[in-house]
Amino acid sequence: MKTRVLRYSMLTVVLGLTTYLALGFGKRSFEAYCPFGGMESLWGLFREGQFSCATGPLNLSMLVAVIILALIAKKAFCGWVCPIGFLSELIGRLGLKIIPRNTKLNPKLNDRLKLIRYVGLILALYFTYRTGELILRGYDPFYIIFSGFGHGTLGLVTIIVFTITIIGSFLIPMFFCRYLCPLGATIDPFSRLGLIKIARDEELCIDCGDCQAACPHDIAPHEMIYVRHRDCTNCLECIDACPEKDCLTLKVKL
Amino acid sequence: MTIPRYSIPILTIVLLFAGYFLRFAFTQPTTSVEFGETGKAKLVCIVDGVKCKGTANYFTNMFNGVEGISSIETIATEHIATFTYDPTKINREQIRKIIEQPILLRDGSSRQFFSCVKMK
Image 1: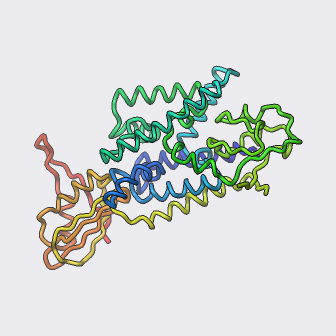
Image 2: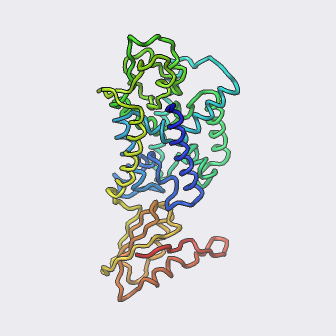
Image 3: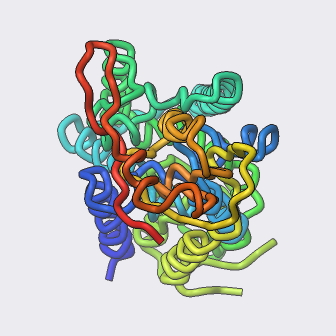
């Protein structure tokens, strides 16, 4: 079975559960499960010993779980669980189907644009800590989609940001995850240390580049021995795409 | 050491479930207010309407000046409000009545904001 079938099945279940909660059927709000809420609550906990705004214990415990997961299996949360990553990937694939293209973003420009997510992280935390409000709600596609432009969104500003995110995802696969996601920026340093990574057998590799073409984050496993890249979600698309059996494998490596 | 592909989804599921149960380790509340009374009886309510710090503050303020309430602690995301109270001055049903009382809005109308779904 192709790994993508398993991965998409898992992502569909998570997307379904999130929608179920968003429709008000669950015990908690869908927001209570967001690991980034844990980051947003840290200052309030440190200063007052209380959770701020709509964050709670589950946000914090999910953040801890996602960080431990990143230390073991890199950004597996992003590739196997996150509903926004899933939607972003689907929109990106749709974009490639409708407008087939081989041109890729200049790697240097791609790397520089990724710095935006760190700026976003710093601004989101600064304003959240300063005001005690979840300021990111107006810009966060997870909240905008599942709350249906609910309380805390910013009208026209939210519509413009959301439209840019959708068009961006259509043109550049994983646009939000690559350039804007503050949770991604939070777990970057842990992901770099992730123990389980994709390994390439140099002798078996024919350097065809199919692995890079299949990677949603445009990482080039055929240029590495171990994929230590911070953006690797261990989605295993590269292993599925590799024409040489056992050339790319999953290994535990410090 | 080579490991099978399905170890990634298994690890992910296991760790997220562990995270789900780890929430019990973080017991910090959303609001915690003491009213200076000495009653020690405890009442835990699941309150529909307590969703964030703002609603939790509003909810807690509804009990300002109410005789018999010693403290209120809320966990907004879990919709939990824990009261300590003096049963000789106020009982559970009176607390429920205060929770579910209609709230006067700026336009002069009134609406019930909170309802007690469960009492323990």
